[in-house]
Image 1: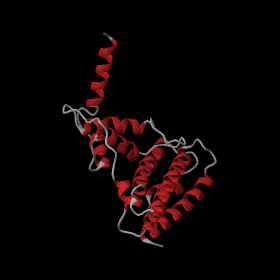
Image 2 (image 1 turned 135 degrees about the vertical axis):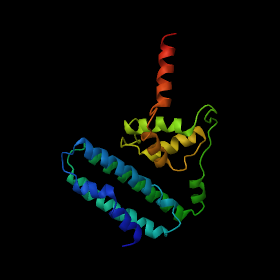
Image 3 (image 1 turned 90 degrees about the vertical axis):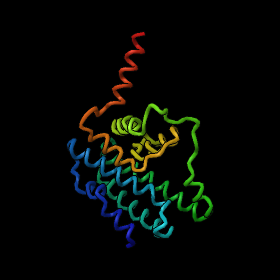
Length: 204
């Protein structure tokens, strides 16, 4: 078993899926969602890693996929959070697998994969990435976005889309979100401004 397989198999997300009962409470679901986000963020970097061979990466994804399939069989309720997160994880694992296979067939595609498209828009000088993160964190938390198959979009997926749209970059999206959520004052400064602006427009 290679090191990547061990890391994935020991991830908090998979451990929680093993341990969570069929009727989790809100605290269980919150912890599971956070663990899922960290798990997905790691999955989405597999095709970009230089620290392991393409074969090792495929083995790790295949092993993790098997574990998730076994766990999925335990959850009969397709509407449960656990089932939906497993489904989303499997979809992203399949995507990473396809990307690695394309890299093996067309080595030059790796450079194409790392280059991001450019938008004609950028963030106005009046605002910052922290303002944008207020929006991203809230949209991610309420499940505003989903993938084409209906499975939940991860926080990192949403962040990357906004980075492309706004021609910006978050050095560490998780740390930026943590900083927003742990503010002592003016937790929703930018969202409050959006709300006030909308109210003013409705009164004109």
